[in-house]
Length: 128
Image (cartoon, rainbow, N blue to C red; front, top):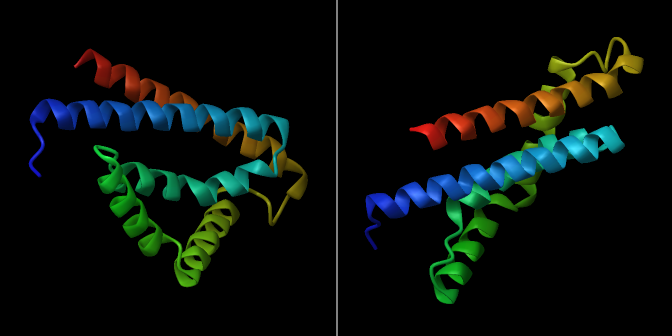
């Protein structure tokens, strides 16, 4: 199936809008409970891959693409890699190992930063 340029543009806009909603959800949940932020680090790449891979043009295409996405991203080894990567990133980008008391606030700041950077990217794309 060949998609037109307008179809690609609408898919891109939908992806970015969904990512903006995801980031807002993460920011809200992380401000309520800092333990949510490490979970969000883990699921963000899964969310992105889902949005890029799963196609809902028809029920058959949805089913096929969903099963393919699931088989590619939900093996035990892939999930282990994703969790280890998320935890490594958190360990490197925060002071959780050296000053654990600062960790909750660092996660809240990071979540707010991610939300605002996504919003500004959306705004820039809507202007072009």
